[in-house]
Length: 385
Image 1 (cartoon, rainbow, N blue to C red):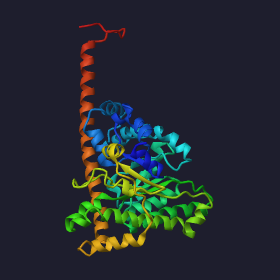
Image 2 (spheres, rainbow, N blue to C red; image 1 turned 90 degrees about the horizontal axis):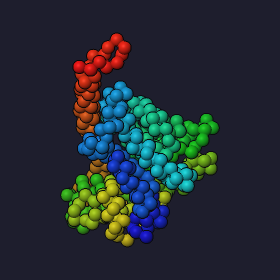
Image 3 (tube, helix red, strand yellow; image 1 turned 180 degrees about the vertical axis):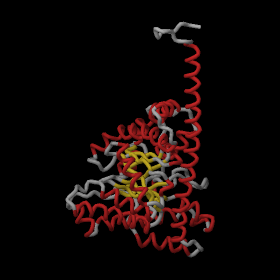
């Protein structure tokens, strides 16, 4: 049993933070499922950009959709991306079915430019949910104030969500509250509470920002301390009367997901975060490179304890060196939203250029075909030239 399988055996789900046409057509994703215990997949604008804009793998799909009169770059991106995401979701359906909807999900993100527009986020989430058409695809929504308004409404609509760009314990608790409010609305109207959700907590970006301000013994410690606080709050929430009341009528927990788990500091092992983030009933999503590294030479697993006091003391030790943790959490969320929006714009520009080239090529082919056929006689048969 390799370390990735051991991590899964410890009660944590391993999701792949990657998607590409080649990952599917070569059978690589199927092998990750069979050999490395991968049970779900996440995507974001950066991942889609790398996959779609940097290769010719999607040219045929783009051409097919352009010829169907899909010309808007954003609509093209979703039309093509959804082909991959639904194919991946089909691979995870056995997991989704065997776990009765606990695991086996794929995420598709709303346009990042909507991070601070609640109504438009709700509309986009509903549209992507309809477009996906599969029960094991989650709509990914940023955990900004506007995004959380959207999460509450989408949950009330019965649409599963992945709440992303969460950094702090406060971010997590607000995301959990939005999910619970959505469930409570459904409960009040007698609707099913079987609505899945995950809350994605970003880890390594904490350390990338804070470590330059800290002495070396504290490097790589803030991200882990913040996850430990979140995990303690997660366990406390599941023991609360509010949650228990919903669970009794069919609600499922909003699982905590650790994101941004690749190592940013070359001084640390390439699997630094993975074994330290092991915790039952949580998810760890990771890039393919990190997954392969951990499966090959992952360090021993250290099960996380829901120890809020110890984590809080570690954060206080770090704050004593001039790191305003609360301000940094808000800054990281804003930076993340801006970065995803910039990647999205770059992707749309690249797809617009590809679509234009496809359109020009198609028109040229039509003109060449018309010339080669020559004039048409009265019987409608080519008369040659």
